[in-house]
Structures are given as structure tokens and as C-alpha cells.
Length: 285
Image 1 (cartoon, rainbow, N blue to C red):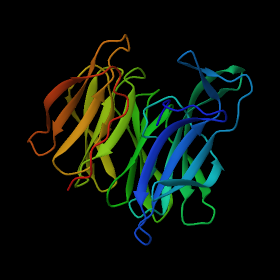
Image 2: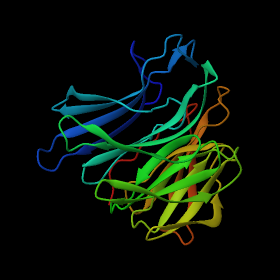
Image 3: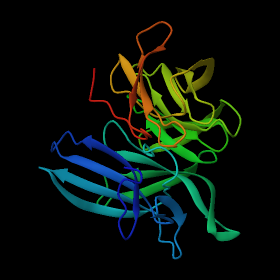
Image 4: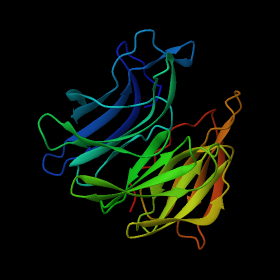
């Protein structure tokens, strides 16, 4: 989970898991930023950067076992869900939002990488890397396993990808706002006909319409709280969003979105501790 743990070799940035149908084992994946390290609570570029990696971890009976450590672009910058695993567990998508600045290795600049990880091979491996948008951050896959969305934090867009087997193909880009609007995470509704995108730069949650591979901005925004960032949706009834606020030590909020309302709307906002950067709902129908 994004800067909650720092080890000597990496910072774990993102976390996802699935249950393998055949063995009932769980697989955990982390995207590990080797460029950055925490110093006095601030993420700074390492004096001697390490390669970014993806860890594939077997989680059985409470025991963790690393199955593979794969070189691939990753970033501590952005919301926790920079890893998405296909519904059938055959592959995963991992974004890399930032890279070392080619002109100054003490700094980072926006990156646009989306890696496709084959989880059926032994060991798992990178199948291909495709281009999303600048600051490619939160990524999600629909329940049908046919479409993926990537929120591009540095250009105000969402990239759309079609999926056929484990082949991921760019299928367009949705413009939401300007480069400062900060799209963070996109999630599909349970039926796949709608998607919600958090925008922490201008404190909105944009509604997208989805028809096959055609994804469009519905020209409707929800207003939940200050700087909505991470968002989760596991069932058909509701989504939950974390509003991270300004990071000045104030208590911040999480909001509940009624997905059954017509139109979809925010129905409850409650105060929590500061900076609810990661949110997660229990599985729902």
C-alpha cells in the first residue's frame, strides 16, 4: 500500500489481490518504486536509484511467498490502485506515473507506461508495455475483462484500452479537464455501463458512459468532498471515495455514492482521520 511500508530495497506503492479458482490461493501484487525513498516523511529521489519492479506474491494460509520480482515501470506518486488484475487472474495491468528526468537524475517527470503482466507463465513476466497518458496512475478493468481505464494525472484525461485475451490495445482517450484537474482513479459500475473518475485537482468525480469500447464523458460531475482521490466499487449498490483534503493535519472525509439512484449521487459524507488515501469496500453483489 502506497508509502505505508518502506524497505531497504523499495517502496511498495500499490496492492491488489485475487483468488485463483483452481487452488483457492490468493495472489498479491505490489508495484515497487525504486527511484524514491522516504526522508522525514517526504518522498525524494534516491542518491543511487534502484530499478522499479513488480512483485507477485503467493498468499496461502496467512503466509507470504514471493513468486517473482519483475522489472517494470512503477511509481510511488499517485493513488494506491496502480495495479489491476484481470477477473480470471490471467494477467495484470500496472501503471508507471513517474520516471527519472533524463535531463536531471535528481528529479522525476511524468511517465505514461502501462505494463501487461502475464500471470499464467512460470515465473510471471511482462508481455508488453503500452502507452497511456502523462502521469498514468489509477487503473481498473471491467468485470467482463474486456475494457480497461487509466487515469492520467498530468494531462486531465482517461485512457481507454480494449482487452482480447491478454492483448491490450489503445482505444482512445477521454478529456475531462485541464492538466491540473488531476484524474486519479477510474472504476467501472457493476454492470459496466458507467464509470466514475476522481479528480483531486478540482475536487470532482466525473461520470463516464460506457457502450462497448466507446467511453465518453457524460458531462456530469459529483461533488463529494475536498480532493476526492481513491475510489472503490465492488457491488452494484454503492461506491466509496476518500477525500484527502489539503494535508494540513485536519480531519478529512469519506463519501458514499448511491449507484442505484437516478441519477447517481453522493448520499453520505463522514469525517475520518487525515488523508484517507486508500479506501476499500468488502465484496458485494
